[in-house]
Length: 176
Figure (cartoon, rainbow, N blue to C red):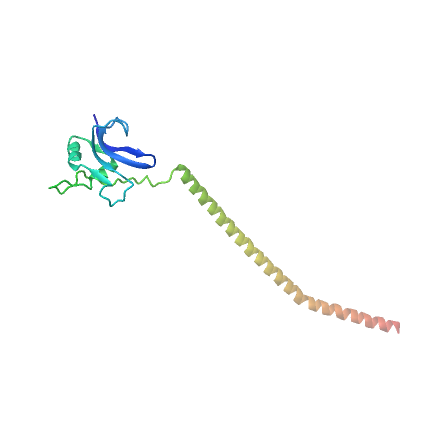
């Protein structure tokens, strides 16, 4: 028979109150127990003395008989020391579960999708900047061509203007 020192829930709906009991591990949470050794009221402030009341002597006796406390009860028992002893009733260490904070499969997929979208967005921005730069260069080239054409145009225009003037002069001479 595997014994557990665990919490058995009592109290009404949304008003929890727990009894610290020694029970067979095969029994239901709020079912049959062997002995009640304390109480726990989570609604009280953490510094309140009546929040956790456990008989340390009974708990130590049951632990010597082979009862294993649950994680929450072990935490409570690690804060209780018996008279004349330095060590707590039960030595509890915080568990280390590095996988607990790791996201699930769906969350990992969403993160990957988000990263892909961000990369695509950055690539589109680069392409847009390159296109804008090319457009500016094309506009500058067009302006340079227009300026070059404008520089050549006055010479042609002057030649064109001189030619009609000469033509007009020759026409006047012909009419005389």
